[in-house]
Length: 358
Image (cartoon, rainbow, N blue to C red):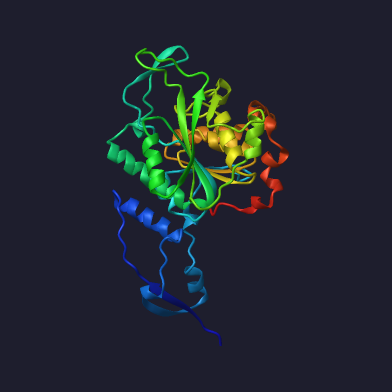
């Protein structure tokens, strides 16, 4: 008769990390362990246990926590998935590595200011989620979510983080602190910015997008030739003159921080291959996901606001229509310079089989 046993060796080591909270400290330790910065060996041996197993026990020792995650929405082709909740908490619940991350976190600029939109004076407040705190609390917030994202990035993956002067300096410092290597700080110079009502300083006409790779020693992917073609045969610079969101991009509704497809399409074309997995931890209206699917990439978006998840869902369902899909692709100028291999449908690539675990 055959008997089966589970042999469990327990290794244990204590260590200390500097952080502003227990949750943040746990994320840092987990990330360092998974990246082999922390390696336990025989000197850390604590004990060994021998447990007899029946068939039921064998099944029980391999739980799949990610199976408990229920998507808010998933497209029929499984190329576009939405989760509702806090990105830090959700990312801890499953094992998966993304090729690229784009994040548009709170800018912390909802302070009662005013701006001009469509010829009308409007308040710039976005919501409670965008109200600023102390510099220390903002740094802690950025450190926590960036650490959680780093844990879900492939070794050769890259992250793009958008911001203004309100938050981008904190983001850049936390990226360096966590071990990322900053590659560029792209200036998105808007060709149609809102006017400065006070007339007491220069018009705020730019946003900044930090591009960083996960590790200083592991090379990243960059589609140099395509970027060069887009830029009239010259090397692409880090100042992009692109318009803000166009009226046709609001067909399903409007998000207060919605990014234009032109910006996200260039980012995705520059730093991913067809079939790649893209994560947006603050997905909002999911411009990242729409651009990803239009370009043959796959997408996971996370947000806490149900209103914006429904907006994202409607936008994705809109491009299920073949004519709308083609129309939107035709409006993205960078696609005209791309070759078939740059935007091929992921279904034509073997890597399409690499699926989310839920």
